[in-house]
Length: 269
Length: 320
Image (cartoon, rainbow over the protein chains, first blue to last red):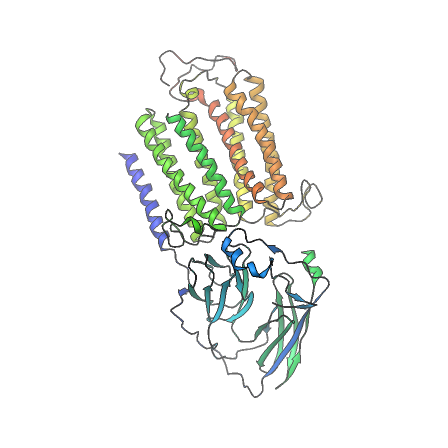
C-alpha cells in the first residue's frame, strides 16, 4: 500500500509539472494583433529642434577583411529553394565594400542627461526571409514594438538572448505568422538566433533615446537632432568589438565622427 | 524473455543517449520552443516534413525518449508481475520514476532556456536511468539468477565500486563542462596552452582542466580494477570479459576526447564521446554488481573462508 502511495505521488508530481509546462509562456511577447505604442520617455525637457545638431561619419576597416563563413542550408530544403537564385550563401559578419564596413551600430552612449523624447513613430520589423534575418543589425527604442514576421514557407523559432531583458523563444511554424515583442530595458546588443537554422542571427540595440544609426553599405551613418553638448559616441561591431569617441556639438552644429576598425582584431580573436 | 526485453530497453536507451548528445552537439536544444507540444502540434502528430534543421534532432530526441518511457512502463509492469524478488519490483518502479523525472527535466530545460544546472541534471539523471536499465538486464540474466559461482572478494568490491563512482563523477564534470560552454576553454591537446598545466585560469578553464585530470584518474582506476580481476579472477569470464572491454572503451574514450578538442567539437566525435562515456559507466557497473553478487540476499553464502578466486556453488535449494 505504501508503494502505491509513492507511485501516485510520483505520477502526481510528473503530471503537475507537465500541466505547468504546457502553460509555458514567454514574457513580453504578444501575437501581432496588439500594437500598443510605447510611452514617451519620461524625464526633463524636450530637445529644441531649433538648436539641434547632427553627427555623421564613415566606418572604415583597415587590413584584409576575414572571409565570411559559408552557409550550407542542406538542413532545410525549403531554404535551399528560397535562395537558389542568389548563389552561394555566406554569413554577413563582415559586410565590407572596398574598405567600408556596414552593419556597425553607432549610438550616443553617454552625455544626454535627462531629456524626454517623443515615442517612436511606428514598429520596427524583423523579417525571416530566405532563411535569413532582415535587417541583420538594427536599433529600437525601449518599449518599441518589434514586429517579427515569418516570410518563409518553413518553420523558424525566434530566440532572443538578452542579458538585461527577458529571454524569449517563440515558434513560427506557418508562413505569414507575426508576433510583436518590446524590450523593457536598454541593452546594447541583444542577439537573435534561430535554433532550427543555426546560421541565422541578428542583433538589435535597445536604447532609451532616438540617437542611433546603423552604417550602410558605403560605411556611412548619420544621427540627427542632437541637442548641444558633449557626447560619447560608440560604434559596435558583432565581431570587432566596440570603440568610442568623444564629440562636442554646438547649437545647429554638424560634426564628422569617423571610426576605424582593424581587421587583425578578428583574426586575433 | 524478460531478460531479452530488458536488454532491448538497454539498447534503446543507448540510442536515446546518442540522440540527446546530438541535440547538444548540434545546438538544437531550443529548436522546438514549446513542450510538451511541438510548435503547437501534439508531438506524436507533428508532420515529418517539418523535421528540418535543429528540429530533427530535438523532436527526434523527444520521440525516442517517449518510446523509451513507454518501454520502461512495460518493463516495470513485467517485472512487477513476473519477478518474485521484491527488490526487483522496487527497482522497476524506480526506473520508471527516473524516466518520468527525466522527461520532466527535459521539458524544464526547454521552458527555462537551457539553464546550466537543469541541463547538467538532465545529463546526470540520464546516466543514472541508463545504469538502472543495465542493472535490470543483469539481474534478470541467467548468469545472475542461477548464481554460477560468486566469489566474496572485498577488495574487488571496493575497487570496482570506487571506479564506478569515479566514472560517474567524471561524466558529471564533463556535463558541467559541456553545458557551461567550456568544451574548448583549453583549445590545445595534449598540452594546455602549450604547457602541462594551463598558464591562465578562469571558471571555464578550471572545469575543463578538471575533466582532463579526471580522465587520468578514471583510467588509473579502471586499470586497477581490471588488473585485480585478471590477477585474482582469471578464470571467471563474467568478470574478465567486462574487465577487458572497459580497457578498450577507456582507450577509445580518451581518443575521442582528444579528437573532440582537436576537431573543435566535431558533432559526430563529440556525440560519440558522450555515448562512449555511458558505455564505460555501464561496463564498470556490471563489474561492480557482479563483484557484489555474493552479498545479494537470495544466495546466502557462508562467511568468507574460501580463498579469493575459487568458485563457490550456492547452497543446495537456495532460491535464485
